[in-house]
Image (cartoon, rainbow, N blue to C red; front, side, top):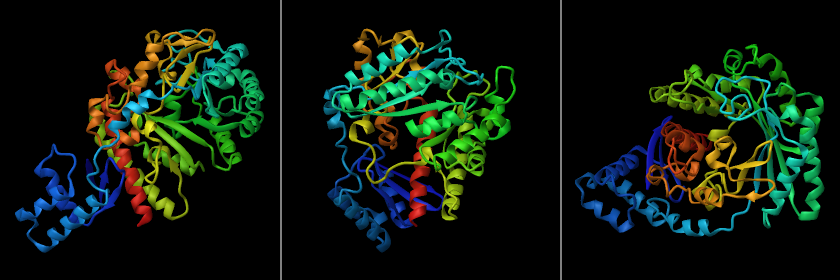
Length: 458
């Protein structure tokens, strides 16, 4: 399978199965386009099959014939029309012993903001406000250690609501995890996601010492952020939190953190929000499309996609310009590895929710990830009894790019690994389905990311 597209003056071809990327001149690009149109359903060609095209009238001029020879050589080298060898590995992926390597601890089902798009209902998650006790958190870490097999590096994210509303328990659990590392030959990588309201020097000092990553929630320009992320009295949060975020980012040498925003129908010009982050001095950033009900006033609709695609293109070009000036920054969705990439199981099955990754509520219940918390059909067990519904885990384990019909024919499948299972479920009631609007945006982001790589090597 190949995917070809034009972006910012580049003729780009991606060989999907090998991951090889080619920049072709116009003649070679159009020659490949001609071959693709001859038989749109055919995904792979052998070199001898391409040789047979020399009899076509199209290739009977010197330039087109030379272009075909180039495509044949790339195919012989295993860099074009590479056969799909990944599907045959699915059984190996499914037979892997399942170990838990990451946990999202819902340290606080409470929040001091009232974000209008919050899937967690201001921290309540379709339930009640609560703070995780040290005892529940300790049992969760014990479960993680006991079920992580020989894996040494374990990841724990303190999440909410707002985790800083339960700060002492965060500190106590970090200390407990550290006390167990040597005994069990483990290394905890702690992260925290915060809205910044309660951020202070003591918190900054602690997270710089103990946290491998920090996620800072901010939606962009003041008017955008304050419209969607106000306090419960509707007063905006921007002026309070931005100086704190700047201080934390600088204290971490602009590494091992990222600003994480959400764009909605109200700011489809979200490239301005990312550039606003950059102008504030931030170097690591992400802005995600909101996922909401179709009738939500802020929800992204299909008719918004053309504007969104233009924004990604615009952002990509600006990032190239800034990088060449020495003013570059990282945008999470444009950061792809064209040389190696993630391991095969990650490429095929994604984030590991429900199998390698679990979310833990304040009272100790297990869910596949934070976006499933409160949906009782996905309640898997608890810290006292362990996994009580293994069939949920098995269903998530079988979820991969070959169980989703749309993924099978998508050029981006090995970059997004089938997309978010929660989004698929929320959209169609099935974790084996896809969220179509999200897929369209993901494909565009992959195209832009590859173009950026090409431009910076040019």
